[in-house]
Amino acid sequence: MTPDLWSYSDTVSGTGQQMDIAGYDVQAVDGKIGSVDEATYEAGQSYIVVDTGPWIFGKKVMLPASVVTRIDFQDRKIFVSRTKQEIKNAPEFDETAMTDPGYRDRVGEYYGRFPRTSSM
Image (cartoon, rainbow, N blue to C red; front, side, top):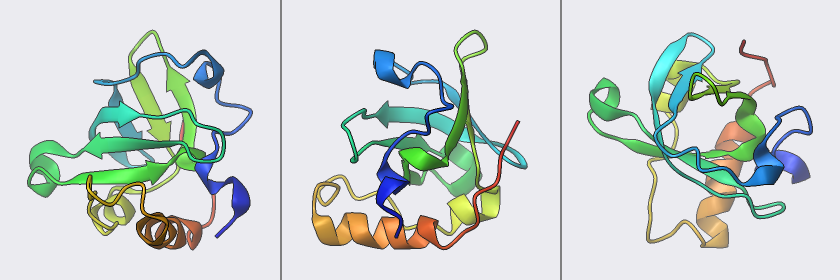
């Protein structure tokens, strides 16, 4: 797992402002995957929780901040560097364990094994 996996990229504008992005659509590299349920901005521990809605039968997933490639505040969209299938296969979001280091390690190991790609 890379140390910066849980940090937003310097190229993602607006994250330092801690704007409320809940409800924004989430665009995987191959199309819409769901919407942001919640987001955090803690240094080195940031993530977004995506509600995939009916696409994956209401599953929620936690994505480390580093997979966010761009935020379009005008169109209310978040772009991530993962495919729909990669997100579908991700560990399911566990609200009771999200602060547990072991759970975060498992999520980080899953996302850390994919090459970084951009999504525009």
